[in-house]
Length: 268
Ligand SMILES: NC(=O)c1ccc[n+]([C@@H]2O[C@H](COP(=O)([O-])OP(=O)(O)OC[C@H]3O[C@@H](n4cnc5c(N)ncnc54)[C@H](O)[C@@H]3O)[C@@H](O)[C@H]2O)c1
Image (cartoon, rainbow, N blue to C red; front, side):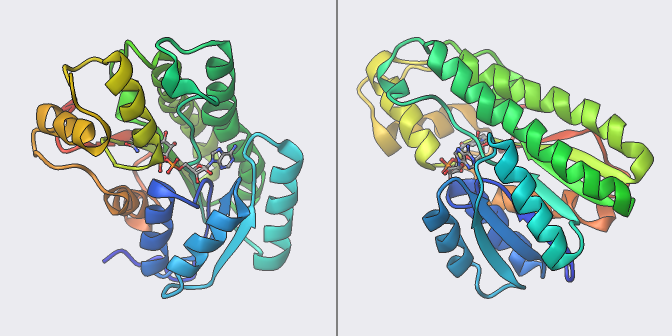
């Protein structure tokens, strides 16, 4: 079991799905976790869900809002004195009504880039000021296997996640002189609100797999069956376990990497 006792962790988008799984694994490993989300209520729900762990708190944080980022990080340093782990998990698949459009529109491109790319960079850059002065820290970005392949129906999302993989490489080099590791996890297929929205779109317009006549969880299950060599979906806790490893001292010589947790979908 990975031991993160005494570590101070901040997770973005921690109120749902994968973010909640990451918070729960970090808490179980003994970390004190600040759960943040654009929705305060869902961050607080995750806080209650993780109440078995270290010191868990919840705050509202919109990763696109630089003022709010600065306020939350400054408050955190004042209260907790340090940041050991940042997990950039917040992400979206499209703007309002995305599932009902065959091709993403300019609003989808703009909002997805603002959250998935600019949001990761903005939070990373603010937190990096603290990590540099501490001369230690770990950042884990949540990218996606969507970064590993083209996508006919969601190129805006795939390219945003490829940008996260590339940012991870660049930021790792920027932060290496300060003893900070920067890595990414690329989750495979996890049944969360994001995937519900993908299933809704693909049941209407198809995708890069024949799922004719299927919708919702059945469409997702068929995708898992066709795509995943290990023949099982991934879970939020699978992603949390990879994050906990990368955030721990036993991963001290891993940086700039993007690790697939996808049941073997991509093997290079
Ligand atoms: N579900 C999958 O199969 C899958 C696969 C690969 C990667 N991912 C990635 O994992 C991450 C989590 O996705 P999920 O599937 O758990 O989705 P989700 O919709 O369940 O969770 C996303 C969370 O991010 C929050 N959020 C959205 N915009 C925000 C903002 N501007 N600021 C702060 N928080 C914001 C939402 O409120 C929500 O709590 C995302 O980055 C997603 O792209 C998901």
